[in-house]
Image (cartoon, rainbow, N blue to C red; front, side, top):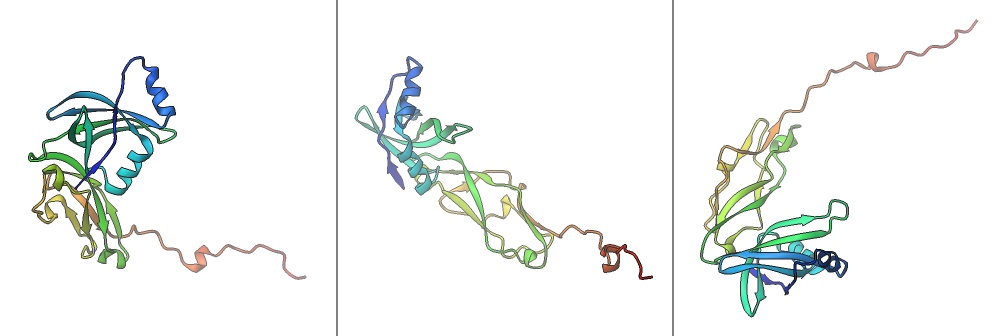
Length: 202
């Protein structure tokens, strides 16, 4: 699956042009990689934000540069620490017939049996590296934890095989586990009940 994004070439000097673009709601960006020269471009910030929200970061983005269609993936995004607005975006031009490696989000689904028994589910890994042709890259990988009991864990090696992509992260990495609840010292009602101090009747 791919989506289109309108872009325009931009000048890189003077540096004040970047601030001017941002004030206009544009985001300075650059595209480089397969069969394309490194090219500074500008994109619409709101449109790009909506595109990511609706399609995910691993979708193929098609843009036209100098009359030529270029298929790209989002390689790196810089955001403002305070406003969370986009500061700069790097797009990597890709060959649609060659495999590439990207990070993919892990999402836990279901309620673990061990949690129902009083345990605590902890997620230890939030992304994995996958390899696939650009059009087959997953937006996310869902991991069903329903059958995890107390003391059980699921690792990268436990992920089911998929014909569209291959997980290349270390198979021993732990994705999630269900641990027994932390034991706390129990107090009796008598110990926890505060002592009442008062005067006695004369």
